[in-house]
Length: 244
Image (cartoon, rainbow, N blue to C red):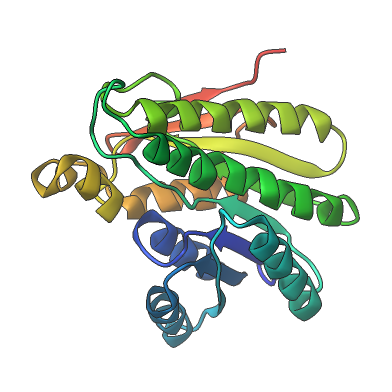
C-alpha cells in the first residue's frame, strides 16, 4: 500500500479517524474529508507527526457539486485515486416509524447513500483508467438486519449493500475491487449519539475494525468482489459472497 492515494470520507473522527491512521501506517497518502476543519486538521497533524502522509479537504459529502470539485482537486494534486473508502455517515435519533421526521429520513439517505452514489459517479471513471483500484463502502450490521427505532439508518445501510453489489457486478474484470464492510456497534461518537455513552463504551473498538479493513486492503483477509465482511464484538463473524 506504499504510495497509494487513499480517499476516506468522514475521516475527521471516530472510525474514520482510526481507519485513516491505520492506512497511513502502511505508507499510503491518506486524503481525508468531512465538514469540520478542526477535526481534519487534528487527524492530519497526528498522522504526520507519526511519520505518515496526510492531506485534508473540508467537504459536505451530501452536496454533489462539492463532491465533484473535491475529486477534481485530488486528481489535480495527486494524479490518481487508488483507494476510495466511503465512510461518512449519519444516524437518526431513536424514534419509531410514526414519529421519525421526513428530514431525519432524508438526512440518513443523503449522508449514507447519496454521498456514495455521487463519489462513485465521479471516481469510477477515473479508476477505470488505472489498475488495481479498490472501493470499500461502509455499511453496518444494521444493513444486514433491521434495528427498531433506527428504521431510516437501517434502510440506508441496506441500500449501501445493494449499491455495492450492483456496482461490483458492473465493475467485473475492470481491475476495480469493490466490497462492503458491515461493522457491529463501535465505541464512537455516533454510537454515543444513538444509544448513549454507557452503551457505546461496551462496544468493539474502532481501532480493531480499522485494522481489519486495512488487512482486507492488503490482501491478508480475502473478501470476494462484491461481497461483504461482518465484524462484531471484536472479531470477524462472516465473510459473504454476493448472490449471483
